[in-house]
Image (tube, rainbow, N blue to C red):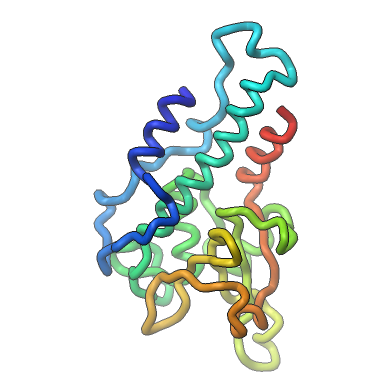
Length: 208
């Protein structure tokens, strides 16, 4: 099973962080086939000796599963670059807003359904320290103006690596990669979360 999964991911993604040239609107038929998290769960080895607790083979399999999940997620997100921003948008054929983009990527790539807006997405999963973020973690911002809007979560993106994240920023723009160190995003950064399903996969890889 693991070999089959790795083969699918390798052929579908090649290099997840490579510079994709996505069209302004992508038909659903051009996107990677959804592979739910359950399909990537480690299977029992045929050799009983390989099932022992602490087996290096099992640990490697779990760690690879975690990496494969993140690669698939980031690969799809990067393919959606240049899809235009549309308020309330949830599909590449029409456009995305920030939470619609994140929700689409997680559901299409992993079969994981997230809440429908950034404030609700902020409330799920595990808090992640900034120096411990991994590809696929969600990054949140407080970008709303005004006395009452400045304190609430109003924007979300998907973390890539090296301080970079991908998101659907605002009207008149499109899905793109930005850096958390940029003055605007650094000023409005509110924190990061790791959805429960991703955290559980990571936990299994640490526990062996």
